[in-house]
Image (cartoon, rainbow, N blue to C red; front, side, top):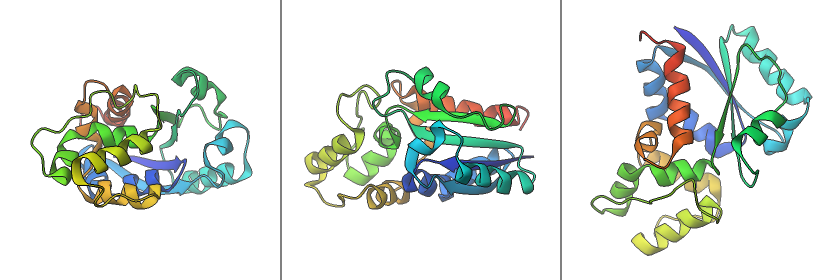
Length: 197
């Protein structure tokens, strides 16, 4: 069994990592969740050596964590490689970087099954969750207005993330979307930790 910890950009990622669906996925992959820590200053904390991030890594390593995943948004960076190269390498052997294109809300938009259930529609699908020009959160809010008259939508990302996650969001569903490669990559990296599980 691999022991895994996470350091994430913000609260929506924490909610996702601590969700029932994600913990069940980890269990099925023979992975133990050791802990989740939120960056104190969002994504900017990852781009240089940061005492808080360093202390989170120490806490996780003290608990004999085998791998530490860093989850952040790409946002408006030109490409994933650019974002990845900016992240400070605390420990190359155990540090695994996952970058959502453009933000975690793109993964939410890619989960057609969960949004079909929330919208009470058959076969809802957003065609290009990682290729939009707008911020994914704004697109997601508009989808709620168009498909539900705005019911359940919140102006706050944390509340909105809770709605989607509690509605059944799973990274497996998002990874099945043909235009959400970062979700697929994340699932692949998790699966690689215990290839025989």
